[in-house]
Length: 346
Image (cartoon, rainbow, N blue to C red):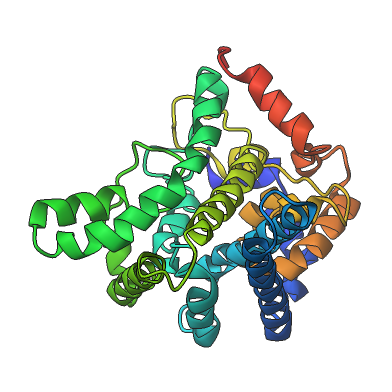
């Protein structure tokens, strides 16, 4: 499809004009949102580790810890979109407070996510954040959700055991870089070295995550910290990944069965906006991710502008427009539609 045909299908110039004043990020929103979320999450984590096991207090504090740290963790998505050289202190603080303790430093997502937004990469085998669930058997959806429970163990082992060993064995180092150095959906994805080369200070991040992990295990081994803290940490991180996996299934329609290059319009229609309830929906799709189709249209928009951009586009283009087709009615309806589609020919 040529550029003229593409613009006839979706009025991108008009859409850009409608939201042109929304591109300026507001640092105070980023800092206050992140620090409050992370602070609340870690305080709730400490309470969870101190109150009686399986008590009501523990269940409630654990739920707060999961949702708050899930929100804090998803700022990694915003960091992946920051302009080069901007928000440097924010990125370092995010790693110190969230990235290293959860074993998900920013280098695991940077560049890999940038590829997800490239028009000639999106939905193809080069896109580690895409898997054609709609054309696969339903078991792939179940396996994807179930894998959430292994991710904390995989990355903990990756950083505290494999990282130091990999510097002694070139083959292990190669395996580590290609297979366990990215946050991705497609387990067949192999991270190109070029994406790591584009990520500044990734080796330092890797070593600091290793130090964090070893220190954490050392505190438990030498009984400065009760062993149950490790179990609670595992449950916390697994729950964060579980919620994110469910959200991810409702972020796209995953209909690109042949993993071919998609047009700009088709990429938009393969993505989902789920405005939902302003209080409930942000719990499972925080930091602007409920407006995922809008984000794919304008990936440089700061998260706090996506809601306003969505409303403007819908009001001006109309609910019956191509843009209106990106809107879905909720989390479970979106997942049910994907589940119903899975295994069928598209």
